[in-house]
Amino acid sequence: MASGRRSAIRLGFGTTLHARSSLFDAGLIVAVPFVLIAVFTLPAGVRESYALEYTDPTLVTMYASHFVHLNVQHLAANLAGYAFLVPTAYLLCLLGDRRRTFRVAFPAFLLALPFGLSGLNLVFFRQAVAYGFSGVVMGYFGLLTLSLFGYAESRTNLAGGDRHAPVAFFVGIAAIAGALAPASRASAAVAAASLLLCGLYARTLLDLGVPLARFRSGLAESPPGYLELGAVGTLLFFGYPFIAFPADPFQGGTVVNLYTHLLGYALGFISVYTFRMTA
Image (cartoon, rainbow, N blue to C red; front, side, top):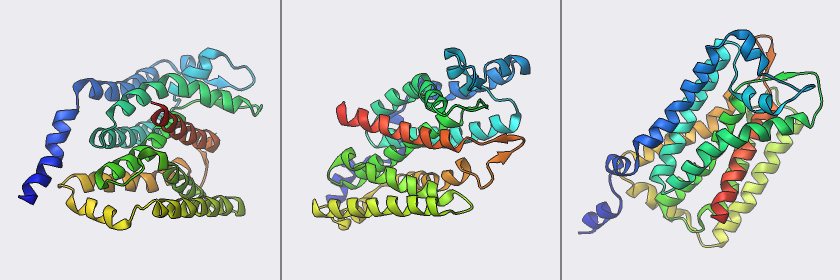
């Protein structure tokens, strides 16, 4: 009897996925790579004209530059990051009862995040040209971070909901600082400070009466597929910073804009967290 009641409450992975997903969502997700590839088929001179020159910015280049790639390797890297992060974030939102969050965040990042990233880059006046989708991809990494926390909360019945999600954000900052190589005193200090904040926050959670036993029992009762999705999300959460923040930012005659990557992560997480807290 108990087993029957539990299965009624916790539907199978495939059943829930089929019931909650839609072709509309899939179409939105798939459309972005097609747009990036279509832009890449434009003549090189046209693409270069839409890159953002910090000394001569325009509203058009502030937005369009994020969809411009000048070589196949750069495009492939961003498409791969998008292909891993966005579908995983979607599944985490879908199966964590947060599909509306994804449907709001996904188009909002495409429309607003390019302007935010470009504007914050222009604060530091310098002779440089910027282009590429990686900053927006990092925004989706911020969405993945909050989605993963929300997914764990929904699967394990932890109290408090998304208001405790900043602990995941600071774990992400610590992971990014740890990915930076070679290690420096600054990156070590950031990682240590982030982990300290996580520790203080974890103590607060325990003081609120959220024992780890509930977390373990929630994982144990999850049907097949749920734990695996959480594992994939966790691997991306800890592994993708090593891709987005390479040891050598000088690649192929260009410089990886680590500042934009960090901004994308922060803006992505903070905007979605704010939406969740005010919606």
